Image (cartoon, rainbow, N blue to C red; front, side, top):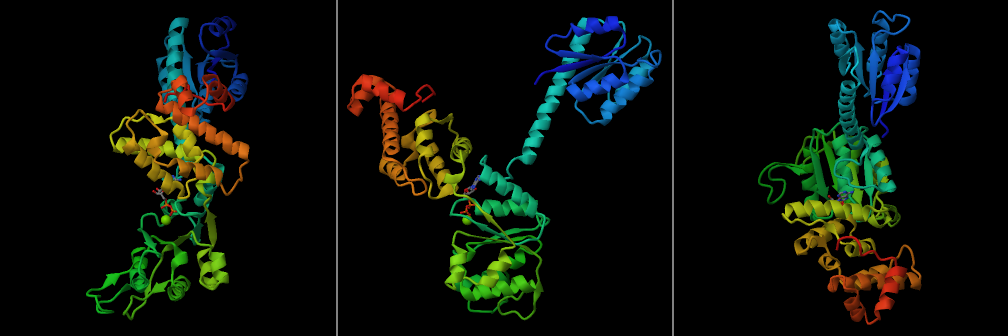
Length: 459
Ligand SMILES: Nc1ncnc2c1ncn2[C@@H]1O[C@H](COP(=O)(O)OP(=O)(O)O)[C@@H](O)[C@H]1O
Ligand SMILES: [Mg+2]
């Protein structure tokens, strides 16, 4: 950021004196209201010194106040230092009340004025930093969602748009891609955020219990129903009902669910009265629902009820650099939790992670890092701490389904891994590493050069 200072002063002598006495500022000048406002528009200065007496009212203060008012009203962060006559306390105070940062009495002592300007500039910078932080939080991914990838940021924008509506949302994505995280983010931003977020995993509850789990039961409704119990749907009244793994819901329950979604009333098992429920419904599944509809294991009408809008979460391998970003955030989190002073991932560990295809997506990555933090005995996480067996890593490298690899790329990756591994075993001693790898020292150097391996970072 270039620090710009605007000097608004109609005395040519003072103007030229002030032009040169502020170190570290690019100084621009103006001598009346019109030129002042133009300069502000053009340069957006961080600090302005403002002589109150300007033409056509050089003897009064009206023009100065008019400029001050406009700067303050424009809601800019610019700091205004008002320059007044010696005896002009009342106007100085008035200027401060209007929002000027400080005032300064004539005759001007350039050194002191420079100090005042510096201080104003520092405050300006702090305010700018705060603004930037606030702005970043507003635009950053939502609470609980860590990402910098374009595809996930687009998901975040969608969430922001649909959360306040009552559209039913179907979240699709492989296991561990963050479907529940997304559901919670929608709830947090919805008008039902003060109500409960009730999650129910349709795959984890025995089929015969799912109905009473969802809709509740009256006392004596079945053996074991010793008291009345509210179901999850009822607990989600005025909140959000998250039906996870909806693809695993049995067909007869699907019909009951559909009835609830159409009529918005429930009946507890064994009950007689209907209860009206207002709740936001969000569903998720990793199952291919459309195929299930074809094979008649999922009701098409239910699908359309649940799916006012669907959100497709990309797998982790399709999220640019998210693997490393997430790994770093998890590392910090778990290092703190475990009270370990781990500084980061070694370049080799980064390399291994980047080339490892987390089938279990974010959930698996989180587990890998949590385990690595526990295993680690160094400042930096090493590949061994990740506990991904070499064959595992290699299989992942070679069997990458999405992008078939050429043999030369596989060789390159394998060589890189082997060299990282050897160098770490011998603490970066090239002669010893060459011995381990059964190549000559010059060959190893040449390989390091050719593969563009970087050992300069802290290991
Ligand atoms: N973008 C993300 N940022 C931070 N943590 C995430 C993200 N996505 C998933 N997680 C974490 O990964 C784990 C799995 O997420 P979850 O929503 O349960 O996945 P899914 O329901 O798709 O299987 C959770 O611990 C969750 O906090
Ligand atoms: Mg889940």
